[in-house]
Image (cartoon, rainbow, N blue to C red; front, side, top):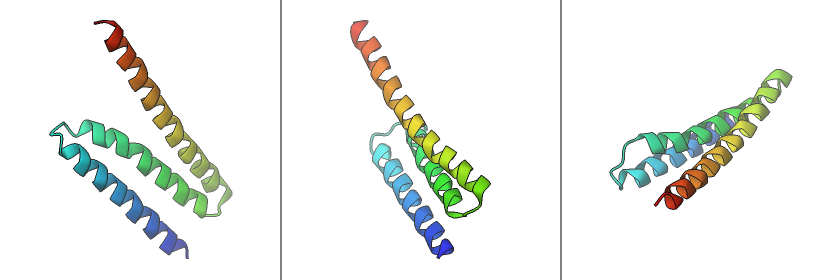
Length: 91
């Protein structure tokens, strides 16, 4: 069952990553933004796999990875809002 879970998590993460790359590829931008957005998906997936191992230290690291991916997304969103407001009010 463990291998099945790891394979399904990896395939879903790969699908999300490919969809993001294809979506941003339509806008002909550099590859930095899609890679920046794929990073939390990969970190969350690795953390979830660590949580499935059952080993106490690995489960703790898994919780840290999953929580840190949320913090990363919140930081990106907050940074985008702040930068957008700064650019708007400097006009």
